[in-house]
Amino acid sequence: RGAWDAVQHGACGDLVDELRGNACAAMRALASGQQVAGGAQLPLSDVALRALLDQHRRELKADWDSRAIGDEQVRAEYWKDLEDALMPEEEMVRKQNSRFGNQRLAGPLEQWQKWLASDTSTWQTGEILLDDLIALMERMPAEPLARTTRTALEGAGRRVVALEQALTERKATQTQLSASTAELQSLREELRAAKDKLLSLTSERDLQREEHEKTRTEYLRLIEDTRKKFDEDRQKNEALLQGTNQNLLNQTRQTGMLEGKMQALSLEASALREEVASLQQRVRDTERQKGQVEADREQLKNDLGGATARADEAAITARRLAQESEEARQTLAEREQERERQPKCGCVLQ
Image (cartoon, rainbow, N blue to C red):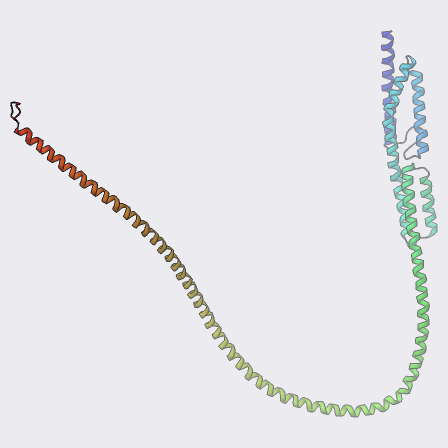
């Protein structure tokens, strides 16, 4: 029994590795966009991709059933392991199918959007683009198909709204044009009336022209007289202006001299203010020093009083010590005298 288990497990394991390798290679080739056996190539519709994967699964199962050896339970377990190993590869194929679908639909969708945005597009061109887009969408998976459909419908909706707005604006423009036409007709009638009035005023203008010539001659004479008077007044004003400029120049010079003196006085006043501030600072410093001197002198007086008292005490002590020393010296002298009066034999005199 142990040998049979080893044989069937070994055979099933080797077969699983072989089939998994072949299946994964086929899945990865399909996911990379290559054309596989049978002519299938991504992108595919969800139905076509599901049928392709089911067919691949059936072929793999048939190969497994024909080559796998062992008990039914053992073969079922290893087949389940093989199916589990293929699920990530199949999921990768589905994702790549959606990605390739988005890429394939991007170009036709962009052309459709450009056609919608163009004001010079014809329906013949749009119909061709739409047929190509629909034919391509029929072979696409659901996710790119839904995204592309939504984008195309949104673009068409925006274009319809824009056209409706343009139509509304055109109607408004036509209404304004009708009103402008009526206004233009009214202006033409007014212009015709104005021309008639102009003809009637032409004769009056000729009469007024003669009167105007007379008035112009008189006006020119008055202008010449006024110009002469203006020249005379200008010469007088120029002479007056020159004198005024000379006075102004003199005043400017005097003002400059006064400003220079003022600046000098300002500098001198600033120097004096700085000197006064310095003197005031010195007075304050002197007063502080005076206060310090007074305090020191008071302290010295106190110290002198203490020293005097200690000196008096020392003098008293010195006098007392001198007196005691004198008394001790006298006592010593008396003892010396008594010792000298005593006989040298050692007898004591009574």
